[in-house]
Length: 356
Image 1: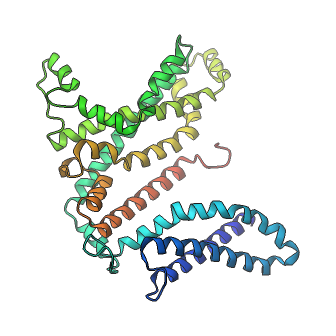
Image 2: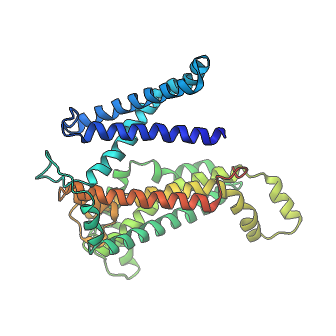
Image 3: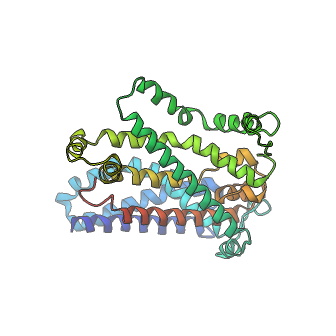
């Protein structure tokens, strides 16, 4: 009952906040219609008023004697809630609003509500299916390689290995280097005339490849670069999980004559599941939204054959200035990732009581 009561209270607070924010920002005579600054002020005021209304309603339910003790934790939470409202709730709500307008460079100061027309245009886009498939390929290959390489290296680092600290430091370098620097370096390595990749290919009898001149080759080069950038994260997560597994379990398996493969599939993987599933979900979301690699390799004007959904959003917003249309794409991406995360976490069962 307490859990349901807390959920109801959170839903009530969120509902009050949304209603107030909509009233403040959509009324034609509103003083908060002066662009983004007015919207931010309206969002903060909505959060404060909704919190105050919520406390007032609870006072009547709890009685004056219990009000002080009940409200104290919420007052301590208020500064953090305001920060979350500014950095999470406001961009999310504003993004939904923007997706229902015709905001572009020509209508930047006075966008008009066109409701779901942008969403209709997104699903009518002939490039949508190919871009979604390319995004799924990008995410699937990258996450699979991140997990496979990271887990393999973590197993090796979990053993008694001379110079293990040095190898661990060496392997974490791709994750520690500033991303722009690493991507720019890889872009130089993929240069058709002077890049080290083509130089190595020529030594084994393969003709130079125009990695940056063909959209499909650019896409492959982007995948290879992102694999190098991302595997250290999975390696460190898997290594932490492996170090939490008791050695006694493996010693008992050795006494029973269990093979190395069965120990991996029946002991290591099941015990790593609560650690790796959230990491895989997080890695999938990061990879799905990875704009830097393709943007640096292909540029904002790159061919459609190398673009994924998030780079398409970037091009629509900052190359073609179709802000409302780009926002509709962003909302669809948000919904896809939200559904994916909920399904994977629920199906895996890692959040069930006793799993963690």
